[in-house]
Length: 128
Image 1: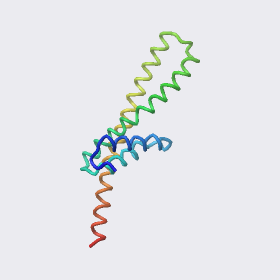
Image 2: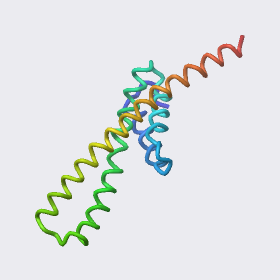
Image 3: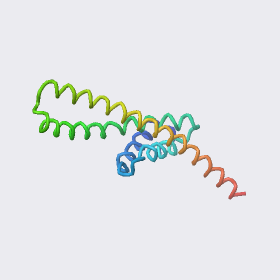
Image 4: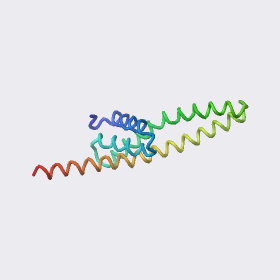
């Protein structure tokens, strides 16, 4: 698809992450797809996987902010202190979600490049 097109491969990996979000380890799968498509070395795969995880964090955080905001309005009564606590909670959740998605995406990207190299070696052996 996008041999060496880092941004395109990261977006494709992020889409895979979002679509497979019900699995719980979807950043690993999305990063793997991004790394596989990148066709670079393992550090390049880890980099595109991490970028994929960072991009995939945005829809998760937006959805979480919407849900927490709705429940916060009903439960907190709308005071300024509650709004500040909700904002602090949102920042903490964002940091942890970003770290989770980026770390698993980087591992997935590394493994995606590794799997690509193994398949290419297997094809080379089969053609001899």
